[in-house]
Image 1 (spheres, rainbow, N blue to C red):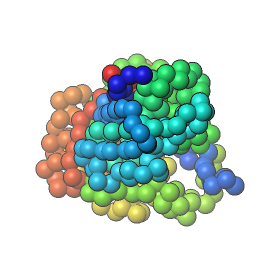
Image 2 (image 1 turned 90 degrees about the vertical axis):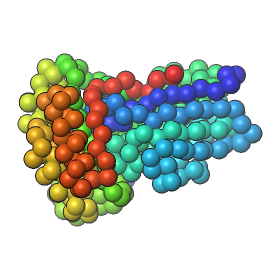
Image 3 (image 1 turned 135 degrees about the horizontal axis):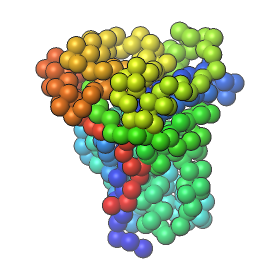
Image 4 (image 1 turned 60 degrees about the vertical axis):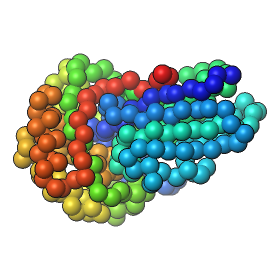
Length: 297
Protein backbone atom coordinates (compact mmCIF):
# COMPACT_ATOMS: atom_id res chain seq x y z
CA UNK A 1 0.00 0.00 0.00
CA UNK A 2 1.30 3.46 -0.92
CA UNK A 3 2.02 6.05 1.76
CA UNK A 4 -0.31 8.49 -0.01
CA UNK A 5 -1.76 9.19 -3.45
CA UNK A 6 -2.62 12.65 -4.84
CA UNK A 7 -4.95 13.15 -7.79
CA UNK A 8 -5.48 16.42 -9.68
CA UNK A 9 -8.91 17.04 -11.22
CA UNK A 10 -10.29 19.90 -13.35
CA UNK A 11 -13.33 22.15 -13.14
CA UNK A 12 -15.85 22.18 -15.98
CA UNK A 13 -17.85 24.69 -17.95
CA UNK A 14 -21.01 23.81 -19.85
CA UNK A 15 -20.84 25.41 -23.28
CA UNK A 16 -24.32 24.02 -23.93
CA UNK A 17 -26.74 22.96 -21.22
CA UNK A 18 -30.07 21.98 -22.78
CA UNK A 19 -32.56 20.84 -20.12
CA UNK A 20 -35.75 18.86 -20.65
CA UNK A 21 -38.81 18.75 -18.42
CA UNK A 22 -38.61 17.00 -15.05
CA UNK A 23 -38.86 13.20 -15.28
CA UNK A 24 -40.95 11.06 -12.90
CA UNK A 25 -37.75 10.27 -10.94
CA UNK A 26 -37.13 14.00 -10.39
CA UNK A 27 -34.13 14.20 -12.73
CA UNK A 28 -34.09 16.02 -16.06
CA UNK A 29 -32.92 14.74 -19.44
CA UNK A 30 -29.98 16.82 -20.61
CA UNK A 31 -27.89 17.57 -23.66
CA UNK A 32 -24.86 18.80 -21.76
CA UNK A 33 -21.69 19.77 -23.63
CA UNK A 34 -18.89 19.74 -21.08
CA UNK A 35 -15.45 21.33 -21.42
CA UNK A 36 -12.85 20.67 -18.73
CA UNK A 37 -10.99 23.86 -17.79
CA UNK A 38 -7.65 24.45 -16.14
CA UNK A 39 -8.81 25.25 -12.61
CA UNK A 40 -8.05 22.27 -10.40
CA UNK A 41 -8.64 20.66 -7.03
CA UNK A 42 -6.24 18.08 -5.61
CA UNK A 43 -7.34 15.18 -3.42
CA UNK A 44 -4.76 13.25 -1.37
CA UNK A 45 -5.63 9.81 0.02
CA UNK A 46 -3.59 8.54 3.00
CA UNK A 47 -4.11 5.35 5.04
CA UNK A 48 -6.07 5.98 8.26
CA UNK A 49 -7.94 4.18 11.04
CA UNK A 50 -11.29 5.50 9.83
CA UNK A 51 -12.77 7.56 7.00
CA UNK A 52 -11.93 11.23 7.49
CA UNK A 53 -12.17 14.31 5.21
CA UNK A 54 -10.27 17.58 5.59
CA UNK A 55 -10.20 20.59 3.29
CA UNK A 56 -8.17 23.73 2.67
CA UNK A 57 -8.28 26.58 0.17
CA UNK A 58 -10.81 29.21 -1.00
CA UNK A 59 -14.30 28.35 0.21
CA UNK A 60 -13.08 25.42 2.34
CA UNK A 61 -15.39 26.48 5.18
CA UNK A 62 -18.38 25.72 2.91
CA UNK A 63 -17.26 22.15 2.11
CA UNK A 64 -18.98 19.41 4.15
CA UNK A 65 -16.50 17.18 5.94
CA UNK A 66 -18.95 14.41 6.81
CA UNK A 67 -20.10 11.47 4.70
CA UNK A 68 -22.28 13.68 2.51
CA UNK A 69 -19.06 14.85 0.82
CA UNK A 70 -18.79 13.17 -2.59
CA UNK A 71 -15.15 12.31 -1.93
CA UNK A 72 -16.18 10.35 1.17
CA UNK A 73 -19.03 8.68 -0.70
CA UNK A 74 -16.64 7.70 -3.50
CA UNK A 75 -14.35 5.98 -0.99
CA UNK A 76 -17.30 4.17 0.59
CA UNK A 77 -18.67 2.92 -2.73
CA UNK A 78 -15.29 1.67 -3.96
CA UNK A 79 -14.56 -0.03 -0.63
CA UNK A 80 -18.00 -1.69 -0.56
CA UNK A 81 -17.49 -3.15 -4.02
CA UNK A 82 -14.23 -4.75 -2.91
CA UNK A 83 -15.30 -5.87 0.56
CA UNK A 84 -12.85 -3.65 2.43
CA UNK A 85 -13.24 -0.93 5.06
CA UNK A 86 -13.15 2.66 3.71
CA UNK A 87 -10.40 3.63 6.13
CA UNK A 88 -8.73 6.61 4.50
CA UNK A 89 -7.92 10.24 5.18
CA UNK A 90 -9.01 12.34 2.19
CA UNK A 91 -7.50 15.82 2.10
CA UNK A 92 -9.01 18.21 -0.45
CA UNK A 93 -7.00 21.21 -1.64
CA UNK A 94 -9.64 23.47 -3.23
CA UNK A 95 -9.06 25.82 -6.11
CA UNK A 96 -12.32 25.21 -8.01
CA UNK A 97 -14.99 27.67 -6.79
CA UNK A 98 -17.26 26.11 -4.15
CA UNK A 99 -21.01 25.97 -4.97
CA UNK A 100 -20.16 27.79 -8.18
CA UNK A 101 -21.61 25.64 -10.95
CA UNK A 102 -18.19 24.30 -11.99
CA UNK A 103 -18.58 20.79 -10.54
CA UNK A 104 -16.05 21.19 -7.73
CA UNK A 105 -17.77 18.65 -5.50
CA UNK A 106 -18.14 16.23 -8.39
CA UNK A 107 -14.46 16.71 -9.25
CA UNK A 108 -13.48 15.82 -5.70
CA UNK A 109 -15.59 12.66 -5.90
CA UNK A 110 -13.84 11.56 -9.10
CA UNK A 111 -10.41 12.41 -7.71
CA UNK A 112 -11.05 10.51 -4.47
CA UNK A 113 -12.18 7.48 -6.44
CA UNK A 114 -8.98 7.43 -8.52
CA UNK A 115 -6.82 8.09 -5.44
CA UNK A 116 -8.42 5.34 -3.35
CA UNK A 117 -8.23 2.86 -6.21
CA UNK A 118 -4.49 3.49 -6.42
CA UNK A 119 -3.97 3.56 -2.64
CA UNK A 120 -5.85 0.32 -2.01
CA UNK A 121 -4.67 -1.46 -5.14
CA UNK A 122 -8.24 -2.36 -6.11
CA UNK A 123 -7.37 -2.15 -9.83
CA UNK A 124 -10.87 -1.08 -10.89
CA UNK A 125 -11.36 -0.89 -14.66
CA UNK A 126 -12.21 2.40 -16.35
CA UNK A 127 -15.76 1.11 -16.88
CA UNK A 128 -16.10 0.22 -13.19
CA UNK A 129 -14.84 3.64 -12.14
CA UNK A 130 -17.29 5.35 -14.50
CA UNK A 131 -20.12 3.22 -13.10
CA UNK A 132 -19.33 4.36 -9.57
CA UNK A 133 -19.02 7.96 -10.81
CA UNK A 134 -22.51 7.77 -12.32
CA UNK A 135 -23.85 6.49 -9.00
CA UNK A 136 -22.25 9.45 -7.23
CA UNK A 137 -23.79 12.13 -9.45
CA UNK A 138 -24.51 13.38 -12.95
CA UNK A 139 -21.31 15.47 -13.33
CA UNK A 140 -18.87 13.02 -11.72
CA UNK A 141 -18.19 10.84 -14.79
CA UNK A 142 -17.04 13.87 -16.79
CA UNK A 143 -14.69 14.94 -13.99
CA UNK A 144 -13.00 11.56 -14.38
CA UNK A 145 -12.80 11.75 -18.19
CA UNK A 146 -12.06 15.45 -18.81
CA UNK A 147 -11.42 16.94 -22.25
CA UNK A 148 -14.76 17.57 -23.93
CA UNK A 149 -17.85 15.42 -24.02
CA UNK A 150 -21.57 15.41 -24.69
CA UNK A 151 -23.48 14.19 -21.66
CA UNK A 152 -26.97 12.74 -22.19
CA UNK A 153 -29.48 11.05 -19.92
CA UNK A 154 -29.10 13.08 -16.75
CA UNK A 155 -25.61 13.98 -18.00
CA UNK A 156 -23.83 10.79 -16.95
CA UNK A 157 -23.75 9.07 -20.37
CA UNK A 158 -20.71 10.54 -22.12
CA UNK A 159 -19.71 10.76 -25.76
CA UNK A 160 -16.17 12.19 -26.18
CA UNK A 161 -15.93 15.23 -28.45
CA UNK A 162 -13.11 16.47 -30.62
CA UNK A 163 -11.76 19.94 -29.86
CA UNK A 164 -9.66 21.64 -32.52
CA UNK A 165 -7.87 24.24 -30.43
CA UNK A 166 -7.47 26.01 -27.11
CA UNK A 167 -10.23 28.25 -25.76
CA UNK A 168 -9.58 31.10 -23.34
CA UNK A 169 -12.00 31.74 -20.48
CA UNK A 170 -12.55 34.05 -17.54
CA UNK A 171 -14.61 32.85 -14.58
CA UNK A 172 -16.12 35.44 -12.26
CA UNK A 173 -16.66 34.00 -8.78
CA UNK A 174 -19.74 35.44 -7.10
CA UNK A 175 -20.21 36.43 -3.49
CA UNK A 176 -22.42 33.60 -2.28
CA UNK A 177 -23.55 30.29 -3.75
CA UNK A 178 -26.55 28.73 -5.42
CA UNK A 179 -28.14 25.38 -4.66
CA UNK A 180 -28.33 23.23 -7.78
CA UNK A 181 -31.66 21.64 -6.70
CA UNK A 182 -33.10 25.13 -6.09
CA UNK A 183 -32.03 26.26 -9.57
CA UNK A 184 -33.68 23.21 -11.14
CA UNK A 185 -36.88 23.87 -9.16
CA UNK A 186 -36.90 27.44 -10.47
CA UNK A 187 -36.26 26.12 -14.00
CA UNK A 188 -39.32 23.84 -13.61
CA UNK A 189 -41.40 26.83 -12.48
CA UNK A 190 -40.24 29.04 -15.34
CA UNK A 191 -40.24 26.33 -18.04
CA UNK A 192 -43.02 23.81 -17.29
CA UNK A 193 -43.16 22.57 -20.91
CA UNK A 194 -39.45 22.34 -21.73
CA UNK A 195 -38.82 20.51 -25.04
CA UNK A 196 -36.63 17.42 -25.33
CA UNK A 197 -32.98 18.54 -25.20
CA UNK A 198 -30.74 18.24 -28.25
CA UNK A 199 -27.09 19.07 -28.79
CA UNK A 200 -26.45 21.94 -31.22
CA UNK A 201 -24.72 20.72 -34.41
CA UNK A 202 -23.29 24.20 -34.95
CA UNK A 203 -21.76 24.25 -31.46
CA UNK A 204 -20.24 20.77 -31.86
CA UNK A 205 -18.75 21.84 -35.20
CA UNK A 206 -17.33 25.01 -33.62
CA UNK A 207 -15.61 22.90 -30.98
CA UNK A 208 -14.27 20.48 -33.58
CA UNK A 209 -12.78 23.33 -35.63
CA UNK A 210 -11.52 25.28 -32.62
CA UNK A 211 -13.48 28.30 -33.91
CA UNK A 212 -13.88 30.69 -31.00
CA UNK A 213 -16.19 33.12 -32.85
CA UNK A 214 -18.53 30.29 -33.88
CA UNK A 215 -18.47 28.84 -30.37
CA UNK A 216 -19.29 32.25 -28.89
CA UNK A 217 -22.31 32.49 -31.19
CA UNK A 218 -23.70 29.11 -30.08
CA UNK A 219 -23.10 28.78 -26.30
CA UNK A 220 -26.35 28.41 -24.34
CA UNK A 221 -27.49 27.50 -20.83
CA UNK A 222 -31.16 26.69 -20.22
CA UNK A 223 -30.60 27.09 -16.45
CA UNK A 224 -29.43 30.69 -16.85
CA UNK A 225 -32.88 32.34 -16.50
CA UNK A 226 -33.49 30.35 -13.30
CA UNK A 227 -30.09 31.26 -11.87
CA UNK A 228 -30.64 34.94 -12.71
CA UNK A 229 -34.10 34.82 -11.13
CA UNK A 230 -32.61 33.54 -7.86
CA UNK A 231 -29.42 35.67 -8.03
CA UNK A 232 -30.30 38.90 -9.92
CA UNK A 233 -26.90 40.51 -9.23
CA UNK A 234 -25.42 38.18 -11.87
CA UNK A 235 -26.97 40.43 -14.54
CA UNK A 236 -24.40 43.10 -13.59
CA UNK A 237 -21.51 40.63 -13.73
CA UNK A 238 -22.52 39.40 -17.18
CA UNK A 239 -22.85 42.99 -18.40
CA UNK A 240 -19.44 43.98 -17.01
CA UNK A 241 -17.66 41.09 -18.75
CA UNK A 242 -19.43 41.76 -22.02
CA UNK A 243 -18.56 45.46 -21.86
CA UNK A 244 -14.90 44.51 -21.32
CA UNK A 245 -14.81 42.63 -24.62
CA UNK A 246 -15.85 39.04 -23.88
CA UNK A 247 -17.15 37.28 -27.00
CA UNK A 248 -19.77 35.39 -24.97
CA UNK A 249 -21.02 35.54 -21.39
CA UNK A 250 -23.10 32.96 -19.60
CA UNK A 251 -23.84 31.49 -16.20
CA UNK A 252 -21.71 28.39 -15.63
CA UNK A 253 -23.99 25.40 -15.04
CA UNK A 254 -26.38 26.16 -12.18
CA UNK A 255 -24.26 29.18 -11.17
CA UNK A 256 -23.50 31.53 -9.63
CA UNK A 257 -20.06 31.54 -11.27
CA UNK A 258 -20.25 33.31 -14.63
CA UNK A 259 -18.13 32.31 -17.63
CA UNK A 260 -16.71 34.59 -20.32
CA UNK A 261 -15.27 33.29 -23.58
CA UNK A 262 -12.53 35.50 -25.01
CA UNK A 263 -10.53 35.66 -28.23
CA UNK A 264 -7.08 35.01 -26.72
CA UNK A 265 -4.97 35.11 -23.55
CA UNK A 266 -4.50 38.90 -23.64
CA UNK A 267 -8.25 39.47 -24.01
CA UNK A 268 -8.91 37.09 -21.14
CA UNK A 269 -6.62 39.03 -18.82
CA UNK A 270 -8.26 42.31 -19.87
CA UNK A 271 -11.73 40.94 -19.11
CA UNK A 272 -10.56 39.49 -15.78
CA UNK A 273 -9.04 42.82 -14.74
CA UNK A 274 -12.23 44.68 -15.71
CA UNK A 275 -14.44 42.24 -13.80
CA UNK A 276 -12.27 42.52 -10.70
CA UNK A 277 -12.40 46.32 -10.89
CA UNK A 278 -16.17 46.34 -11.51
CA UNK A 279 -17.08 45.22 -7.99
CA UNK A 280 -19.67 42.81 -9.41
CA UNK A 281 -17.83 39.64 -8.31
CA UNK A 282 -15.52 38.41 -5.57
CA UNK A 283 -12.69 37.48 -7.92
CA UNK A 284 -12.06 36.63 -11.57
CA UNK A 285 -9.97 33.67 -12.75
CA UNK A 286 -8.36 33.06 -16.14
CA UNK A 287 -8.22 29.49 -17.50
CA UNK A 288 -7.98 27.57 -20.75
CA UNK A 289 -9.80 24.52 -22.07
CA UNK A 290 -9.83 21.66 -22.73
CA UNK A 291 -8.01 20.13 -19.74
CA UNK A 292 -7.21 16.53 -18.79
CA UNK A 293 -9.52 14.62 -16.48
CA UNK A 294 -8.54 13.20 -13.08
CA UNK A 295 -4.80 12.40 -13.11
CA UNK A 296 -2.58 10.86 -10.45
CA UNK A 297 0.38 13.11 -9.63
